Image (cartoon, rainbow, N blue to C red; front, side):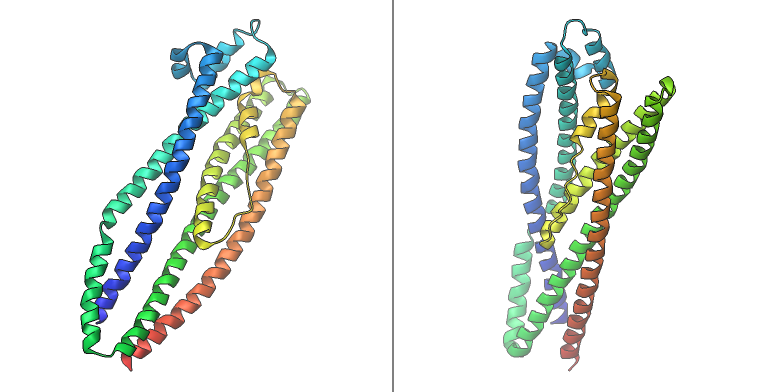
Length: 310
């Protein structure tokens, strides 16, 4: 009986994970379709702006800037800004599609590894049912109920750990972004005070660093939200860095004044600080919830062992 109970517990855990993976896969498929449609629209927008598909695929962001700058006399400033924004959004869309493909491939591998868990669970349950008829039905029902509680609590602990891991990853990225934004802001003041080309280049370097880690932070915040959804919790923090991503790549275009650049750096830094504060609060909540679940799980395990040894 004990061996069958262990098999059932393991199979139920696999069934739970497979159902979770399938739900997540459906979400990713919908998100990917939406992003693919968005990418097609952005590509059409770029083709209309540039009239050159080959250059669209081959020119780097740096080379793209110089190409646009060379047509300065032929384009209005607003058209230049829109072309840059479209290019950046298109590159972001391609990166998001690549990330989604990686996540979907990993989920498919996990689902395939689990296999047909329903059939295996059905076979074990039939075997156990036969033994129950030969032993104590009342005791078996009680033990089954405690086992179900144990499985649910163990799954809750797993979800809490995954949510906390995503929060930690997002926190690390945001802390790096905070450091880069602070440096960019400080060098920005020096730049406006006449610091010369060197201060301009250093500021740009810190802005690029912040852009990269903010993109990473967004990825982990989305992952965190998915884990919190599984727990029935909600992440109230919504870090929108698209404006900063644009300003970082449009910096040399002279479309924006130094003061506007500085204001957007400060606004992004404020968002990051707010998000870090909320993440710290959430991590405290997750820790409290984990402690509660661990205490409840220990009690269920002890109760079940008591019945088994009685």
